[in-house]
Image (tube, rainbow, N blue to C red; front, side, top):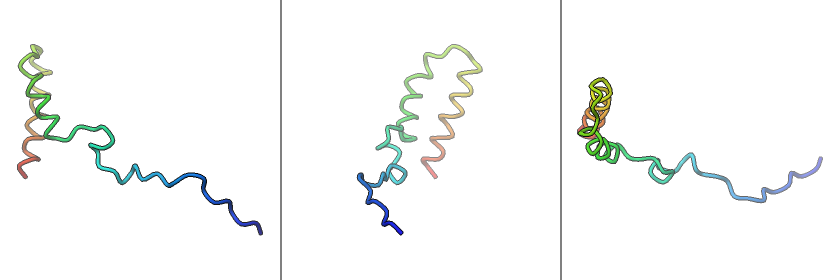
Length: 63
């Protein structure tokens, strides 16, 4: 039986990296962006949905 060839590259550990390292915003950063965006939204339904998302992220931060 032949020996397996050794790997020519290192193992990818991206799955273990924090979300921010992969380019995703943290909940606090999303709240800050929504705070800038919400005053400009004129569509009431969209504003209500985004405000609910913003409030849920803010609630999660306090928990």
